[in-house]
Image (cartoon, rainbow, N blue to C red; front, side):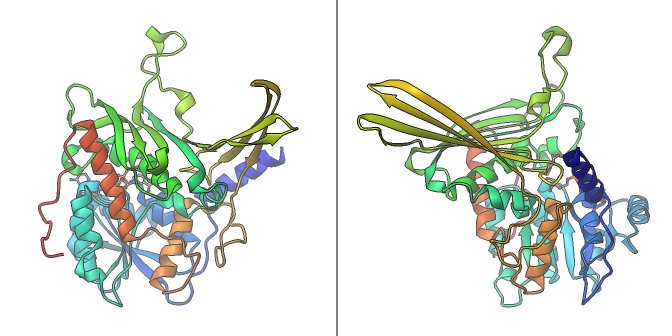
Length: 422
Ligand SMILES: NC(=O)C1=CN([C@@H]2O[C@H](COP(=O)(O)OP(=O)(O)OC[C@H]3O[C@@H](n4cnc5c(N)ncnc54)[C@H](OP(=O)(O)O)[C@@H]3O)[C@@H](O)[C@H]2O)C=CC1
Ligand SMILES: O=C1OC[C@@H](O)[C@H](O)[C@H]1O
């Protein structure tokens, strides 16, 4: 009962955080586009951040911008994205445009000296990533801050999870991310090739990012890859679902599966084929660690196998659970004489004290933790130190490109605005 009340209270505060008075010298943010993700990723987190004011928005249609500003109490509405970027009263820009426009508009922001919180995936492909993250505007002592918003990394559940194993001991990783068909319509930006859509650029990007993070290194190769294209009438260069396998150094392997239009065909298949598969709706990341063997009771052998499963690693603030499963087998003369299995359940809604200056509340979302770190960086404070640096964002896009190559699909298109002089 107490845990149900805790769950309800936490989730209430996730969407209705207490408002904190602004103090110090708050950073003023502008938003490029009246994007659906903006409230969750910035506007709500800003309510409880004492040093963040969401001051301005611009949308292609001024009426849409006005309505968005009114709904979210944003004082300034700019007529164009360029006007927003040129606004001298703004310190930071949040860029939640379609992936294919990330590069062009982020470069404009950096040239205007604005700090940028850039939605994931950072850009369309590795070429753009190298040009963006190694851009001359980022090489000066007082360069603006640029962060690819891989928000999951900043939550204490992820930070706790990565302390539960040593990357060198991981033998296999499996990630399953899916959403039921119908959540996004066929004309959503996610399924538009020219805007750099595709499931690998969306849920697949999280799967690739978390896998790379678990190993702390890059895949040696994409060993296999397949996809389900968008249905007839839609762009066939767009993967509606993607499946890929990777080899990492020392023979470790990984398998990812991401589906933005998951359908079922279970129970009575003919009747339920267009229903979502509910069992896959909770995102999962499963690690298998190398088994450990030691001598036991004279001539016997003790084998310990461990698995760690992280349920809902993308939205851990709503609910999550990390299961650490240990199975011990005792063998004598090749026969199992005894077996025991135990599972520890872990939940981490607030930072543990191991990381200095890592603060938060149990209702802070991944985005709220991300905003904390972003502001610390702009203010040149140490903060928790958790970060996604530019070279990491480049390697991430290289892994995405390698996967598209293996899929036999074209890389997502490079922006026409790409500058050759980085
Ligand atoms: N971190 C996270 O959890 C999430 C991140 N994302 C990322 O955020 C970005 C936006 O996603 P989401 O908010 O769902 O998308 P939306 O379609 O809601 O928002 C995209 C915005 O881009 C603007 N835009 C500019 N040019 C175009 C164009 N040619 N076609 C369509 N839109 C255009 C629109 O702004 P205008 O208002 O000016 O018309 C629109 O509001 C993506 O990069 C996505 O990967 C998305 C969801 C979750
Ligand atoms: O980043 C994201 O996280 C949540 C998903 O619903 C969405 O497709 C994706 O863009």
